[in-house]
Length: 100
Image 1: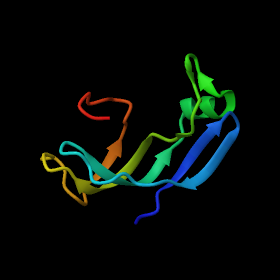
Image 2: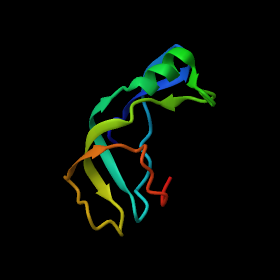
Image 3: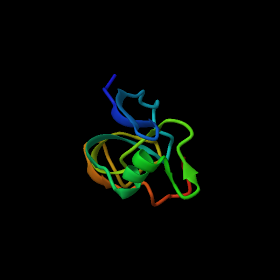
Image 4: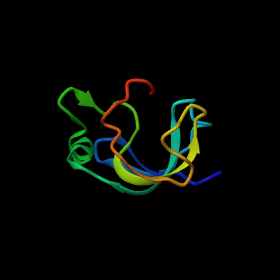
């Protein structure tokens, strides 16, 4: 199994580097990525130092960092535009509305 080192915020001012479990195989329209570099942005800092942003409050542990670069390591059966080994830039704040 690959290591999945993650920056996990448990509550305000409680950040921990943890190895988190990778999900199983991707769904038919999904890919699984191996992250290379991940940025910590202003919203991550607000969650860490303030415990939330507006109505979004940290109630359960969350993994911070959502803007990064990665390599595709697995592809779902219906994925046509990416293949294993492709390098990608990630911005998951733009939802496809087809997956979780």
